[in-house]
Amino acid sequence: MNYEPLRDTLGRGGMVILDGGIGTEILRRNVTWADHQLATKPEFVRGIHEDYIRAGADVISTNSFQLSRRALCNHFRDDTHRHHIGARDLDERAGLLLAASVRLAAEAREKVAAKRPVAVAAAITTLEWCFRPDLVPADEQARREYREIFGVVKQNGADLVLFETVNSIGEAQVAAEVAHELGLPCWVSFVPAKTGKLFTGETLGDAVEAMQRKNVDAVLLNCAPPDDITTGMKQLQPRAKIPTGAYAHIGRFNPPEWMFTDEYPPAKYQKECAGWKQAGARILGGCCGTTPEHIAALGALR
Ligand SMILES: [Zn+2]
Image (cartoon, rainbow, N blue to C red; front, side, top):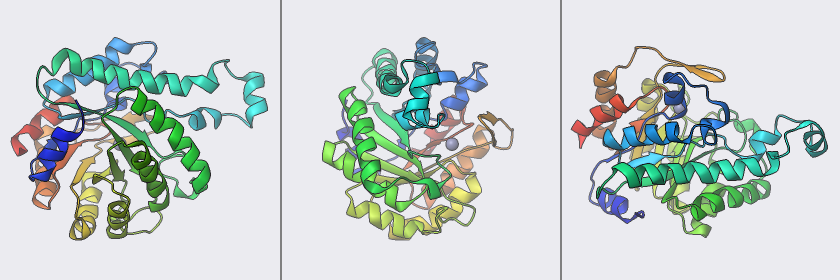
C-alpha cells in the first residue's frame, strides 16, 4: 500500500472513511491505557485496528497519541533528574513504541484487509499538550523533534502522517515542512474551539491557506464536539482548495481518560457527518469516544 489510491479517490471527489477512536476504544474494552498497551497487549491493539478495517475504514491510524520522547521527559525536572529516578529505557521507549504502533496497524491490514487498499496513518499530535498552544516549542527545536518522530514512522512503513489535534498554524507549518522533506504525505487536522477558530485565535481560513502553501495533502478538524466541528467547517471550507475532512469526539474528556456518553449513537453521528459531507468534507471518521459501530455507519455516506 502507499498513498496513491487515496490521492486518486480524493482527486475525483470520492469519500475516504477514517477509523474511530483507538485510545478510548482500549478504555471502552476495559483495559487501562498505560503505555498505549503496545508492548503489553499488542494483539489487543491490533484487534481494534482489525475491527475498524472490518467496519470499512480506508485509513487506520496508529495508537500513538502523544507518544514522544518529550511527553515522557515532561514528567521530570530535567535530564539529570530523569536519569536519576526514571526507568532506564525512557530515552528509547517512545521511538520503540512508535515503531511498534505502525507495525501493529500494518499487521492488522495484512490480516484482514484482503485486497482492499487500506492506508496506515501515523497519528502524531503536537509536541506539548494538544490544547495548549501557549506551550508550543520554538520552530527549530520542534523541527528536530518532528524529524525524529516522522523518521521513525516512515522507516516502519506508515503511508502518511496524520498530524492531529493541532492547535496553532506555526507548529503545523514546521511539521508539514518536515513531512514534505521526508517525502511523507501529510494530513493536518486542527482542533477548533467553540468559536470555530483555533485556540490561538487564528482562523481556519488562514490555517488552510498556510497548509496549502506547505504542500499538505488534506486539512481536517478533530477532537471537538460535533457542533464545534460544524462551526469550524463553515470557516474552513470557503478557502480550501485541497481535500478536507472531519472527525469529532463524542463524550467528555475525563483526564487522563475518557467519559463515554450516549449523546451520539452511530445513527446520530452519521447525520452530523452527512452535514460535513454536504459542506464539502470528503474524509470522515471519528475521534475520542467513537467506536467501530460509528465507523460502520459512515459507509452509507460513500
Ligand atoms: Zn479526540
